Amino acid sequence: MSVAMGLGARGKAAITAWDRFWFQPELPHRLAALRIAAGMMLFYTHLVWAVNLTGFLGPDAWIPRGLSRDMHAGSWSFSYLWYVDQPAVLWMLHVAALVVFALLTLGLWTRVVSILALVITLSYCHRLEGSLFGLDQFNTMAAMYLAVGASGGVWSLDSWLRRRRGDGETVPSVSTTIATRLWQIHMCIIYLFGGIGKARGELWWDGFALWYAAANSEYQSVPLTWIIYAPFLMAFLTHLTVFWETFYAATIWRPALRFWTLAIAVLVHLGIAVHLGMITFGLAMIIGNAAFVPLAWFTRWDRRLAGAS
Image 1 (cartoon, rainbow, N blue to C red):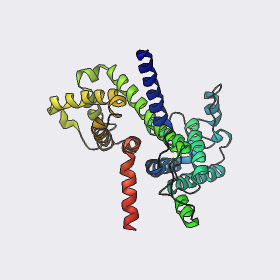
Image 2: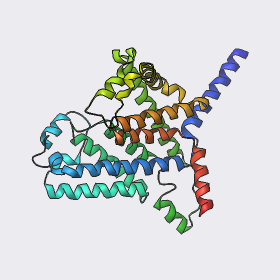
Image 3: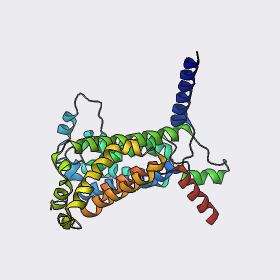
Image 4: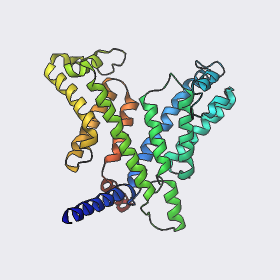
């Protein structure tokens, strides 16, 4: 009888913890910070397409729109860019997309523009095969979860207008909690498979993977080739990267280990940005890791801003 009661108590505790993890209402400050940072990244990366918009999307695009549509045949993919390639129309749609990303960053009509931002981001990704990288996958992830939660709850024009109308204080919401948890779990999945993939590579076991990345002239910006003269450091950083990625999903949830996990994330992605020239990707992944920064840090910052004003 006591065993059954003990199992029942543990079951109830597990259910309570599950409900608290997913459905305890959360203030929107952390998600709002992610909205501002990810919104600027969305705006910038789509602004870059304007360098040669017709080359990517026009009537003589490197991948014609008909071929792009055929490549997605039989899937649930959709892109409004499959149905237009006239330069004038493309430019109007592109400027409209940039306006949407700007409004998302500023937090005006956030609930609507966050959904539009997701549709736009997916449309560009489904249209631009052969031109996509990890940064585009991050953009899609960010746009998706910003559309789920109340990302315009604070630090936005929406919240400023709400205060002007006297609609009351910012309140926690379940949608913000769900969006944040999905973002966090997605980051864990990214690193878990990244670590497993690296662990399958011989160079990562040998400790030479970092050297091959540093010696690749295609990606060099600030030279890192001096590391060949420090083989112990090179091997240590190589193995540390594999260990950190593989066990990120375990260590990031432990308060005692979270700071060190995030610190390594910042150092790794800053290294990628500075030494391998992938500045936007490095910054995007740092933004992604910000989902694990404690909410109290953002609310404390908000109180300081309120006190200063």
